[in-house]
Image (cartoon, rainbow, N blue to C red; front, side, top):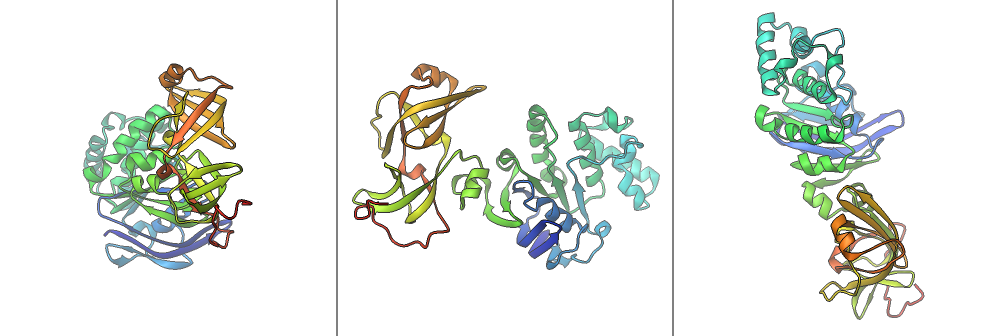
Length: 366
């Protein structure tokens, strides 16, 4: 494997890395997802050699590079603002790293032409950076990083400054870079869509630590903490009391009981994804164990989708197509039924609880 990070820690002002362990495989597109302040950029900069770790080691192709100068690490980095030199043409921007290495001008010109052709930016070579769009600047910054033939390419929020249409197009282009160039990529982002669209494996960071790692589908479908669930788009996260009854596992929220599949008891946080809620005008005949009557409190239209907020003793948000909303004739203030499976309820322990066994049959005061 090209890159291995062992027990990496770093404190820089108010930002921290806490015992980070990662392995990045050959040709892998690895996404690190997390909010601002999670330590993502410090992690990249420490891998790149800009910061020396307080603890831990970094290995590239089984060689310890923890103390190797940044320019000798064979690691490229692209920041979110691209950092192109405004006084140089695009051709000279791309070839800058090779010039610093003392490569012959003719060879620089040849290699610049090759990488520009690969990224389909040959027509931009004579232009100045200020004449380029955001997407074009990004391609140039990536070309400048790739021309030095790094083993690993680090991307710091590369899509955050782009409009939605350009961002979708660039995701597609970035996804092909490992197969086109053989480079392994670590891409940090706060957009959950990047995780699904790009990552072969992914990690979620919070407060300087990696809190979950795995395939993107696994992180979405089986979040290990309420933080991961919320950050990957779970709209409905609520506190409740989990216990057992003759009906199985029950979560009690006020006077409402929710069927769930879980081994947790006591105070919990439970979550339901918006897309798992089924709306109807009458109670549905189905195998789903949760059927709740609810009042529509707000409808928010976003393109072809409608986000519908309801009160069923607690607040839930579901999503419908606009066509389904109109077919059901749902409007503000209407009474509807919400149906969802017990398996759709994700349950997380409230870590302030000491996890005593609890039966809702005998402890109705809970």
